[in-house]
Length: 294
Length: 295
Image (cartoon, rainbow over all chains, first blue to last red; front, side, top):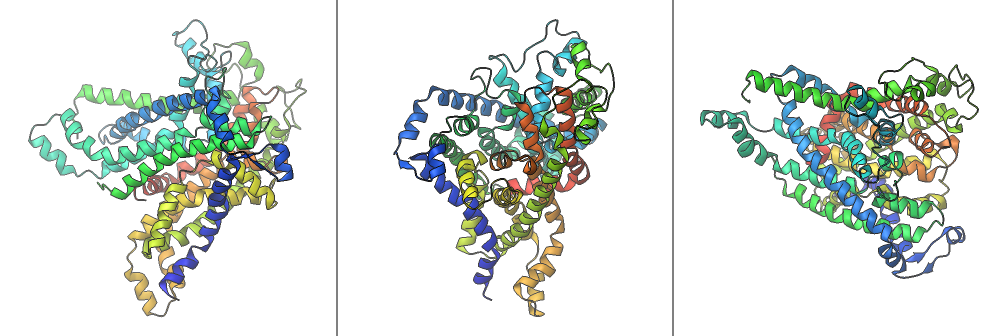
């Protein structure tokens, strides 16, 4: 068998799966987004073409723009804090002489094991106004006199849902930075120490520049995934109070699966979300392809 | 590598304790919540540690609601889905297990060709996989629902397995490809000279060497599949084919479910992947960095 034929046959299963469950549905979603599709039409299987109507209705919907605004705030907060925390904690894990760092290193991957929906429910227990664990801790420490309604207050709800998300997804970023730190040659630091550079200077002039490629990758990956946050929203706030935590994925989900089940508009809004993520994905591909290896 | 004066060390210890406290906070909450009664939670809303210690929450879930125990004696309403715990646990195991096997099987075939056979289309396939990794489930939920309906795979475990395999396949390929790239090609060439076919050189020479990568990829696939909510939520509505995340999600909007019961079922659902992470940490760390950096 020739190399080409062999390579082709090895990829037949992958091509079938990707074609059936990814490529075809993406095209089909595009098709649905320019047709009028409700439950009745879905049952009959006949959809009337309605051009850009679905997109028009999505873009005219004030709730959609609230969702986009909330998603953007959510993304900036989660991705920003994750990058900063990941670098700090990875440096902390790297301290060979500090015995508590070994405990942290042992525990660091734990949040990765928690199902997102369970994570959401656990935090909704933590945040609960009446029975919440967080308020209990603060009462016990004597920090508050009245319970705080963390996720039920429109002013704080969006910030409240960022914390569980950061908690769950931070290990991934820490692992990547920590792995990159291992790749920095020791003698760079030794040379700097001979030159009398202080710790802060060594971080700023050696560590940080060498971490830049991995930080860029984390930024892009986490941005793409934070745009599509769903489980924590479902478990903690269901978009509420009011529209304070409506995010883009929640918008598509609600438009589609709660009455009046507008599949066309749901597809259109999901497609706008895809477009935003697609731009991020292209940036990622350029990063990976430039291969700024450490 | 940093100056280690006593003050610096103290600051680093405090930083570590803060991080540890943050990691453990939700886990302590779920533990304490799951061993309390509804009454105890309501009785004193400022108390940190439980007034009482009870395993009734677990008993009621694990006996499908038959043994209600003391704290549920007067409770008339229990969500049906709580009673389906065993079915859901079994379904989750079947789905995650099958998805792991299928993604490893098909993923290694593709990853190997991408790493070894440098054609223009294999490069294109790699790029397609990188882009596919970004496609959020939410975008495909409607067409996926329609496609699965038309091939009769709604309300079935096989439908969920097919969909999740396709969603995870690109990620599996991205984790495996860089590893195959590091295996020296001379080994297969030697096997080929000895009369092995391309395929049997792959199966008998390359795959055994790739065991660490297969372990890393497999455990990551199992964890992601065990956690997946949206795909089974959209495709399966019947209780007998629900997975654990769907059962947990169904409690969110339920008429009356109290935190103690929710925390107990969350604890039971997160236990398997916590055990996996504790045991196979090294592999997961390797897989995560391979899949993100070396595309």
